[in-house]
Length: 303
Image (cartoon, rainbow, N blue to C red; front, side, top):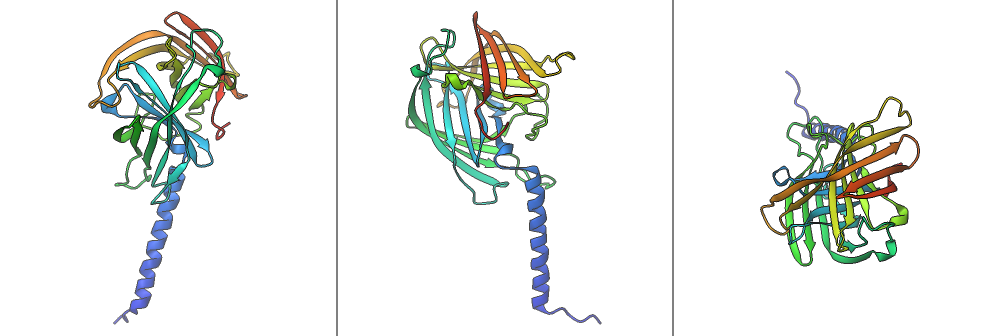
């Protein structure tokens, strides 16, 4: 007859097994979901197509975000949270993390007025941004998917958008962030024209760009460009993306449920990325107004 194992030894064996499982799970999770890199990209609600949230890795465990929505008049407007560095986690960061920061609204010169003048840009504190991010555990059947619960307060009004999804801009199944597949995903700007920018979300040969600019009245507005890679075999030192630009209208960000009321093709856009170097060439035409600019990453986290 086998001698019974002392209770203390049995307990220690179980604890050791538990520690091994936890360590193995952590290793798998950390290898598959990284903070904050894997949360950089485009977030949306598939049931409310027409608005979205861009999240960008700024390095040093901090992020920035741009919220592109619609005002009470149904016209597109955007808000920026440039410093989401107040992050906390009740769990390891590859499981869940909560980040918050101030939201600002800016005004500036019309994009079609000629050379952009940064001195004309104004900014005001408009509210608070809070994003609660969860990460998937690869290989774990019942792990939580990669999601964000967005809570934002603007001018005293609070909106909660639960379970936003990470969007694959190629139109296929949702994919994880990958430097190899998405080398250009980031917030881009012209350092000499501070006040406007371009959110670029790329997956292989598909690229979705949001132009954060200003209208004739100086108020913030945005346009979306759906671009496909058009690089030719002779373009050995650069990658080209070209396609149409769209203008949209939708319901006020404070109302629920959201409804997209109008989409029209407004022009064309092209972005050329060099395979070496930090600058890209952006050109677009919207309603007959053409703009050319040299842009580079705003983030210091990626080359």
